[in-house]
Amino acid sequence: APDTRTPTGAETGAPKESKGQQGAYLTTSQGARLRDTDHSLKAGPRGPILMQDHHFREKITHFDHERIPERVVHARGAGAHGVFTGYGTATNLCRAGFLAKGKETDVFVRFSTVLGSRGSADTVRDTRGFATKFYTDEGTFDLVGNNIPVFFIQDAIKFPDIIHAAKWHPDKEIPQAQSAHDTFWDFVSLHTEAQHHTMWNMSDRGIPRSYRTMEGFGVHTFRLVNAAGETVLAKFHWKPKLGVHSLTWEEAQLLGGIDPDFHRRDLYDAIEAGAFPEWELGIQVFPDTDDETFAGIDLLDSTKIVPEELAEVQPIGKLVLNRTPRNFHAEVEQVAFHLGNLPPGIDVTNDPLLQGRLFSYLDTQLTRLAGPNFSQIPINRPHAPVNDMLRDGFHQHAVHAGVAPYRPNSLDGGNPFPAGDKENAFLDVPVRVAEAPKVRANPISYADHYSQVRLFWLSMSPVEKEHIVRAYTFELGKCYEQAIKERQLRCLANIDPLLCEQVATGLGLPVPEPTEEFADVTPSPALSQVGKKWPGD
Ligand code: HEM
Image (tube, rainbow, N blue to C red; front, side, top):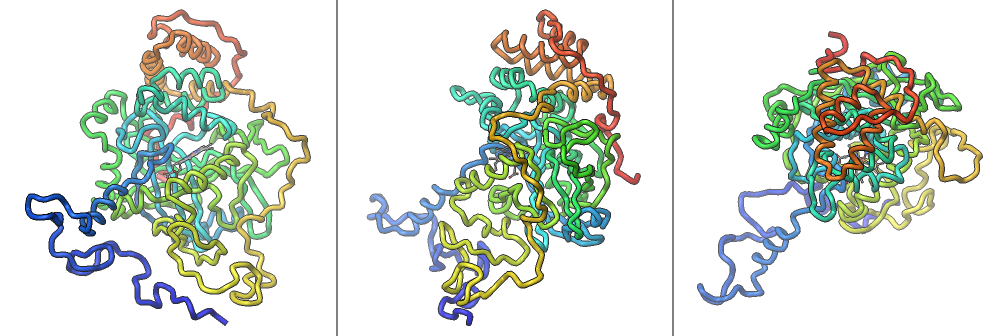
């Protein structure tokens, strides 16, 4: 029988969720009426403040604790609410219900820069985060992507290293946000798998015009499962309705001074004006083969793309952002994304970068959001019913009933695993885990660090190439150490002799010889997307 001893919030008449302000009168946090909030309680008008002034202490103490730690990366961001509508075009590949034709699902999106602090400028040269929380009926799905389709490193164990190298120097805490310093170039010229992502950063993609004109990428390859249990591998893409547009470097510099909130303001102003930003969600689909490659490209290597000429992006739904947050802290600061938040039908692969991320986000959020109950914060609450066995802990808001938080049990709650129910978010695919010796090593294919960055460079138009050369020259020009500039020039020599020569000339340094064979690649027109139209136009 249900336990009736412990009243829930609703039963006691308390509001189900805190509404912030209620009633016409100012009160303490306990609801006691206040008459004066401008004068502390003193021993006479000129006397010291009395310790007993509870209102003073409550007000100041709470203020003292208003800030929570900023994210260790992606600290600077802006967010918006919206709706995702499935097209039904993916239901033969993926059984996730939110992809069904015409199905509408609430979403919250947070865009961000990666390197700067919370107060840094929006228009710096950097990667942008593009994280989407789909509040699906079958549990929350977080697609935690970037506006660049590849990542700096292949294995998550190097994430602290790239971030230490790319964020500020520990002695001076500069620079705030740009890839313009010795440790960044030291890292990417020593860990040459980072050269691909770095060139995307040096291209116009590193200085987007607006969040509304950015593509988004899930980066990793995921495994999709349909109702029959059949699987495919897939990469997620967001395509902006307004096309892909960038700032010029000069615009980015000016805006950084004139309006450091440029992207944040642009997003909010557009939504408030009813010009709702739109993206199409698409997937590139690959057969789920044993070697997990497609056209010779290792699908588990997050420093590689699959060119769209080889695997078309198939539209599967539409996202419209139509509501700005009411409270930045409550929504944008407190939102917590996690790659492990997956509905039935979407599963992970063995990409070592993805695997490491599965650990890192929950771990960091335990500190950032002070304890294990942050999924109860309104912005993080699933819209699907929750019936978990997680109990107690800091900031527990639920008043759980019953004596038996284990399942099945014979006391309360009974058996939540009815016979015949096959729904399961995490054991969808009984994929074989390789029988292999334990090693700290990469697959051989991960050693190719130059073919795709060369492909990217050769795909650029002349003006885009000019921008890339100027970006490398400017950013490398900020390095104090000559040896680091020279090492990065040797990397550029392995990508393209003309690129290397132009940057070396700009820096006033000798042009080095390549040390690697040039990869034989065909330029990919789809990479140069500036002004690309909305699919279907
Ligand atoms: C935050 C994307 C790799 C650790 C974020 C955010 C995005 C993102 C978009 C901001 C989320 C938000 O707006 O709240 C990516 C992508 C990656 C990647 C696309 C590679 C494909 C990694 C790796 C690690 C990592 C390898 C660690 C092993 C973190 C952490 C945060 C974060 C700790 C802060 C989360 C928080 O405080 O809530 N990442 N990331 N990321 N990322 Fe990543």
